[in-house]
Length: 304
Ligand SMILES: CC(C)(COP(=O)(O)OP(=O)(O)OC[C@H]1O[C@@H](n2cnc3c(N)ncnc32)[C@H](O)[C@@H]1OP(=O)(O)O)[C@@H](O)C(=O)NCCC(=O)NCCS
Image (cartoon, rainbow, N blue to C red; front, side, top):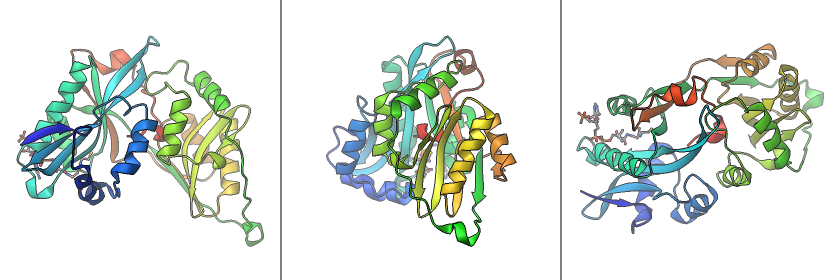
């Protein structure tokens, strides 16, 4: 088996069957090039490691460099693992293990203290990650509501707004000033969200005291993040989202307790636990909670 970086990889097209098969991701290297350029987490990374067996791509592990803020308020990059897959015809030959080792070596070369990843507790990979020393950071609670509007109000308002990103950043920075985790954002963060189609700028709502980052698909609205300074403002934003949605509202990664109770009091169904889980592995002797506390900030917009 030969291991090469994504950047050196000649046969990138061979990732399509693997990514489509396991992540339902119709991977197109040309399109992905735009994501690499737009995503600060990929921009300077090898993007990942590929395992080749007689020129055939048989496994992949993606790597990124993710900006975090530690408890003392210092910026610190960590490693991020994504896109982990082994060709099923080559499973159980140690490909995943070798690629993970190579990825951790990259993070160590960069001096990172932690490697992070998102996975599902229902996947066999979860146990392998634990074997490699990964531990849970957080699960992702979520909220759901089916919109049942009286017939006469079914005419959908088509609100087109310009997203005031500097206002969003200001509100976010104020709300997360005591928080550690994925709280470092700038203009490039918005570009990443738009390129990855995580948000639709013209659907997002920004008020004086808060905002909601949203995307819509066939009348179903997904809330990627709500940030507001008061619980009242959270409820107002939720009401506005409900007013504009025609079918279903899905809120992902509702980690904030106040926000959870705001959803609950507006009749949303809550899943407090999830199979999706953010995990970390220490690459040095440092403890994760000593560095980040026990309320690591992560939103659905940070998902990788
Ligand atoms: C998870 C996955 C990448 C593992 O790849 P792999 O190349 O087969 O894994 P390896 O051969 O390197 O095995 C790693 C460890 O898992 C064990 N293992 C592998 N397949 C296993 C299975 N089906 N059941 C139980 N253990 C298994 C191996 O024994 C090894 O542990 P050990 O060396 O300590 O004994 C592969 O199953 C896969 O692509 N799954 C679908 C995609 C996926 O879930 N990706 C992760 C998303 S976060």
